[in-house]
Image (cartoon, rainbow, N blue to C red; front, side, top):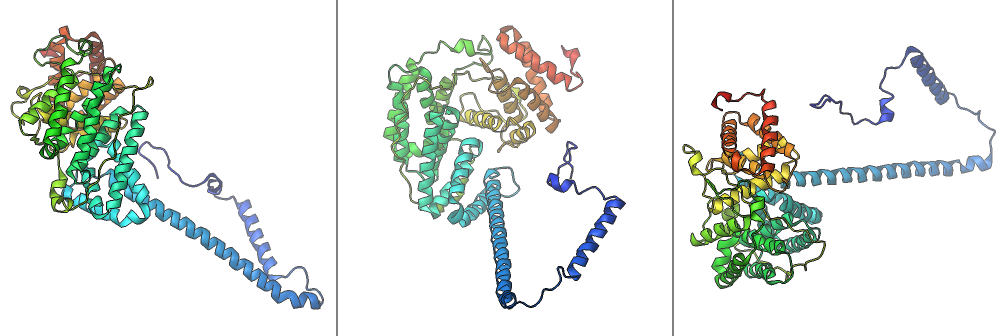
Length: 500
């Protein structure tokens, strides 16, 4: 078989490859003689029969029996080895099947998502007795690496918990262990996803709401620590606020007094935060036509608006609502007391950033309306698109497909969101999250994937950037020039030059 690149793919060992060339006539003749010689050895006994020996002839049946036992033993050993290999092969096949089922859950499908979740649940339930540790490890991994599909996985865990309470408890414990390990290893971006996953388990009746509120209260209390860097407090506040679009309504309905206290603590902290770093991180030196807000300020404004709207949110897929009759009967687990790890000299927290804004609802008057800058839906969409890039950035074609197949793409101007999010990462200061060339190749794949729509949006964005070069950060100008020249070189330098 040949792969797309033209390389020959072979699974035959090298010793077997030496036998592949056809034998010459001389070697064939020697082979025939060898076969004939072996045939003669079989027909003609050698050495000749010896004279009768009582000791030898009386022991012959015993020796025959020993030889027979040896042959049986050899056959038994072969059978055991083959059985072990077959059993190992079956285990590997089941493991691969489980990985495929779990990793592809939430992908675009012709079948209803609720049906897919239900089918995967039944398969996992059948294999829990023999593959529980593997299933636990897989679910913890996707919670950390595929946050854009979180609600599908939390629904899956909720259904498994409803049928197997012990499994639900073990999963919660495994998630807490993984959260602590991520924080020790300074993997704070992944730790945010784990916190968000745990909070959404409240919606699936896996975790009790009071214990989740207690955990968030411990997070926010970090803002009252002394002699710690501001980025530490920022991360804990962000981990709390960024979970509220998913679970804010549920927590506020059950623990409104405690939630008011936590939000009051956050408000006090937001008023005394230092923001001297913001001008250095802004792409443009002016706030017109779109303000370049500090990321935590922007998220805080979005959460305040969501609270004013009675915690309503209209974009997150919530498949667990279809299983409410099953999930509401499940027993819930309490989170173990979670104390934030103390600050250490080697702790490396995420750097602050600015929320990049380029488009608003006026830029696409004919299509779906783009959510406002302080709408929580805007945060959810941008956050999920960033998560997709973070998950698939090494495979640009897969990344482009995942971006364009984002759920609910018919309700929003998806191409505008995609272009804005990619430029937000490309222009992020002081350095972008990934190599600059990655964003160039990603734009090229997106234009190939949707030639009838995305190039027009990209051209519109390019003209906007060109018109605002006089107020743009110098480093961002260099990145813009590098991207644009590379992009044009891949499309034969075709552009509407007469308009310039």
